Picture 1 (cartoon, one colour):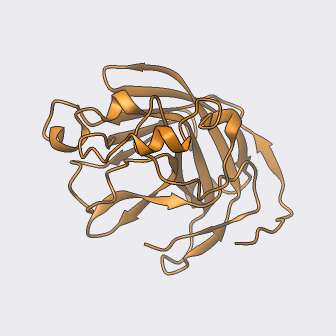
Picture 2: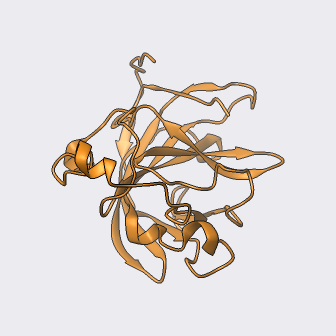
Picture 3: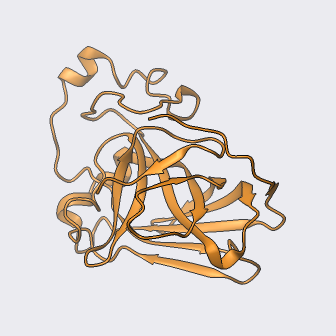
Length: 216
């Protein structure tokens, strides 16, 4: 995948954008899959990636705005984020967006290989020894170590007082794209018939100009 530069007037956010990510209750209806998930996996940071709304059939679009969202607190299964970065200078009613989340283990579990643009500073898999051969050989797949997002709310992205709600509903819809059971970077996608889910991202864009490509 190749990026390219877009010559575009941009500005940093003038007002604080915040985001709330509510996770599925470990003891709720998705217990079978997520009972231990929040003990083993966490969201290290998130991004709000902005592009210009276009034809729904257009699967490739350049990133025009990029806000990085760092967790401010986690309480009652809810992450609270503060976001800052680059906003695209296009009319607010033409701004489309996707949300990406970077997920990393909190303690040793069965893990897959690194197959994305990896940042050790944020993920710390090497520092924590999570990818050591001996450590991985002692692990086995546990079906209840997934995490699943229930709802995402973004505040003030399209101006003061704006609220953007993303209802992921239960963990079993859009199967299995609402369950996350490994480290990586994931991007939100929306199906007209199935609702919201997640796709793996193979790069983690830190700026603007690179292409977003959807393959659902």
